[in-house]
Length: 219
Image 1: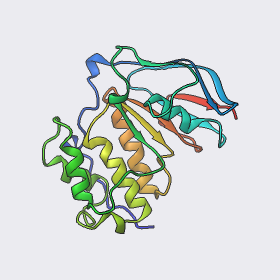
Image 2: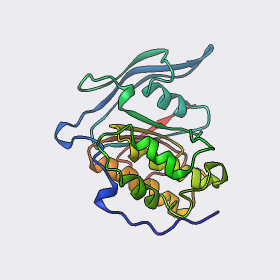
Image 3: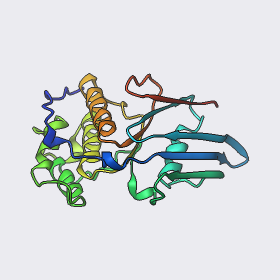
Image 4: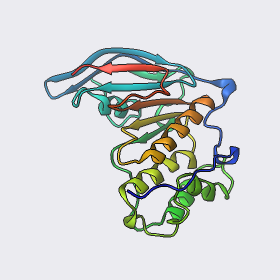
């Protein structure tokens, strides 16, 4: 796998993900997930405070991806509620980083970050270049996305999380297809999101040392 460039982390690269003076909590109450006649999980309750990182684990089929998709509104729960403590609409506050990278093959990494960046008024134009350096994609900035390796595509998709900051990150197996430097990038992004007062729900089979909360779903 192609190794990433040495990362240079500077404050300018990391916009504030949330207002630390007005942190909110994520609340899940009596949540249930069903597929057809099969109940995947039920009576699920937890609260994640601002600045918290929740590691969701469990066997394949236990409902990890379904839980993330329910939180951001892509999947309707069979029962229960999901809300933020300040009662603001949840979906616009979410970034969902799933198994599919959601990238357009005909664009370049520079164009991808540039267009994503335009949706956020909190970013300076130079931030797009900073994010490419952060993701280790400066040399590939003007290649077509279709020519990137699996690890490079994953790092580009991760960089988009900072191009348009959101309160809540939902990360589904974010370490997949990444080398050691790419995994360090995930950890750095998650740490910075938490330090800024944001929320992270991360589904992964492997341990997540950065997580201060753990939820294991039983298949």
